[in-house]
Length: 107
Image (cartoon, rainbow, N blue to C red; front, side, top):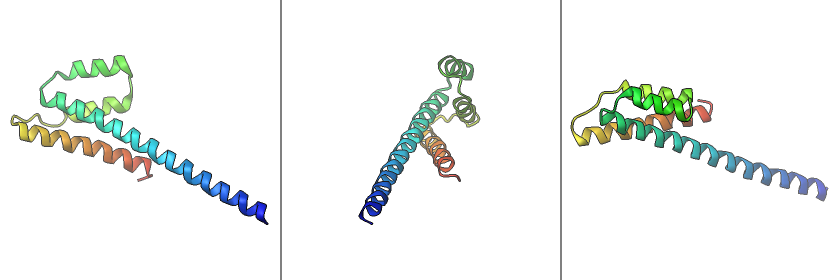
């Protein structure tokens, strides 16, 4: 009986530690997507040419998700005032991170 409790407890502790590790990995991944989104939207707000950004993404990773983030950023307007640019950048970052977290949580 003690052995069964020990095994069950060990499994629960291991499972909880694994779960926390997975949560941290997912959190870190979504944070990185957010960082990328922020960078891309900053370039968008500075009116950097789309073709240059896509060329860089293709050369470095050729990742379809990264390309989708770039395209979505360039689908958004470029603003003239710094206040509106900063707001647009923050909103886009949050939108990408939200999408990442929803996907990671099955939603």
